[in-house]
Image 1 (cartoon, rainbow, N blue to C red):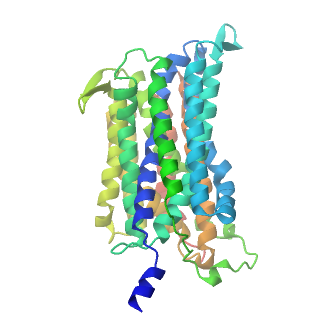
Image 2 (cartoon, rainbow, N blue to C red; image 1 turned 90 degrees about the horizontal axis):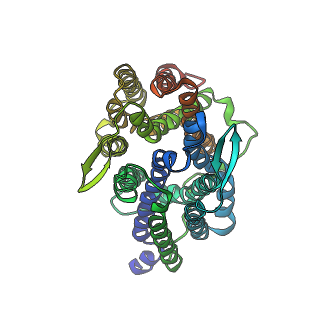
Length: 428
């Protein structure tokens, strides 16, 4: 009897470890894409006039637009083909996205340029690169549609769903922390004038690595996971989730939070260069740009904050959110006034708790609409596309990055308002 019952319960340890590893890849490639902004600005955009920052930050815009495009498609793939098939599709898309980057690098020498103004030209290879960024975002969106439910629902002895999400988040943060080091310290190796041909080998290695992961996953058994929602949760009485005002405000909260997070993570290197922090530093035995080290330490702060998040369990989400937004606003203002991007590094520590706090407050008291509300909150991820690009546009208009951080301050102030007022349910 015992043996029979044991055989009926799937062993999720292997799939859990696979998802944690894939979460590392998601975080790593997300920030790798962002960190290509600064070096490619010099390699591709030397002749675009006053549009350098606008076009540079479009790399991040293109990436994050892949998420809303693929969100519903990925969910339908899961329903029609299952988690494993969807996961493999996402990995194949990832190989293709990296292949587009490789094509961009190889084609730079012979594709030529297009005219975008009086004497200003844009390489066609750069257009291919941000197409690659878009497909990269699409691929990682597919992976996350599989990874997140697996981490929540695959029961591993000695863990809860929150514990598994935190482990996945820590793995993701390790990837984001190492990505700037990889780009500046390995791909471009502290080079003063980065060139596109330095991308050939790294992208080939990444393509081979992801292809190997896809092949490995295709050979493994990934048991199906069952949703933990109740039958009542699936009842549709025609009521819209948008009637819950704290959810609507929460979607905006996710939008501005993700936007603020990516503004700093992606654009701190450009701000550092504009502020004169252009020196080389030694880190882990490699020479990397000072701005790239700031980005790496910013994401490291996110990792530390997530690892220590369990110590804040007795503090309410709204209090955590309010304190975090006040600290973040203070650091950003000081960074602007003192023109010292190093102060932005500390924002990573307080940003680490914001996603979870906003998410929890936004779905509070939704009852059977919780799953729909969770899906609605994913719309807010588009903030990572829109706000960093807006910041780049303003950097070109204003002739520098100093005042562009007002955008991020406004985001932090909205989060403070949400923590104090906007989080309250309709009936509160």
